[in-house]
Amino acid sequence: MLATNILHFTRVLRAAGLPLGTSATLDAIACVEVAGIETRQDLKAALRCVLVSRAQHLLLFDAAFDLFWRDPDITAKMMAALLPEVSGRGSAAPPPPPPIRLLDAMHGSQAQQAPQPTQNPDELEFDATLTFSANEKFQRLDFEGMTTDEWMQAKEAIAHFALPVKPIRRRRTRSVNRGKIIDLRRTLRESVRTGGEVIHLMRKAPEVKPPPLVVLCDISGSMHRYTRMFLHFVHALTNAEQHVEVFLFGTRLTHITRQLRNKDVDAALGRVASAAPDWSGGTRIGVCLREFNQRWSRRVLGQGAVVLLLTDGLDRDDIGVLAASAERLRKSCRQLIWLNPLLRFQGFAPRAAGIQALLPHVTKFVPAHNLQSIKSLAAALSET
Image (cartoon, rainbow, N blue to C red):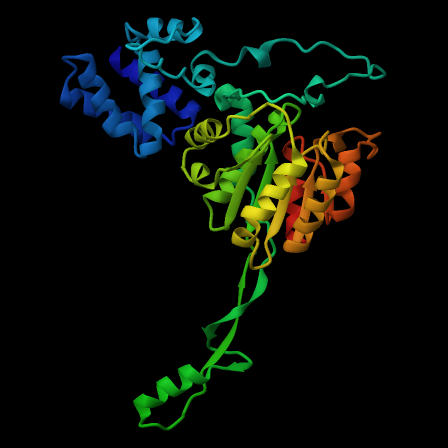
């Protein structure tokens, strides 16, 4: 009976994202037999030492163990997360709720089993998430709200993406066996071995590396859904060899490159949510771009950087500030690519004043509303 439960527990962890195979299940059963299960903590420690190989998976394992093996306090913890918070001097912060992908892995996604209602193809639908919010709302968005299916699709798509930015030639050179440029310094250094006689001419060639990638993501109320999806793609680029700098802007500008360097995507996005208090609030695109030009452009836009601007362009601030900031940003970078989810509509027309102010200064104008748009973005980056 215990071996069967360990088998099911391993399947839950695998469905939640841990890289576990058949050998891990057999090792867990053997470890429990050797270590014994006198207490619940002994069982947890035995399974953890076998099933967890990375530090970023510890929190997910602990949450899965408490849910699967029925911690007596787990019900009280989950109820405390649902009840309104009462703060006091002696009150402690409530524990974070378990990830949605862990709950889906244990109980299955009921949304996929529900029958989808038939829709009239001639019926028009309006997306309320594209409405503009002028007032600042200092709210926090829980990135754990993604379902298992959505999370797995993003990871599967990202796993097949190569570094999309086309490499460019740098001024610095590297030593090569064959090249058109003679490396005089290396040639003289090698001639010391032969008593000052130059026998072989050393060669060098310009370095070829991808340019830095700077990402500016709009987190206003009309963009939070698309930014949440796009940050999964940016997280993979940040943890690769690509040099990436990431900024969020709503009513203020936030640098989140350090938060995204965590290997676990859930932990990284959780830190991003804590660092951006203006998530899902208002938007001041022109002011934030001006702040980026004044504080960060000289630091991160060197070496032919490519800028990705993810926003819908709906800004009610001074349009002159937006146009001037966009013009300076375009002159400071190699390419300025605008990702706009409004391009999902076939009848889209640049009628908003903010969109008209941004369009003359962008290199490419591409959609950003689903996984297919991210794939098309990779193709667009490879042509820069």
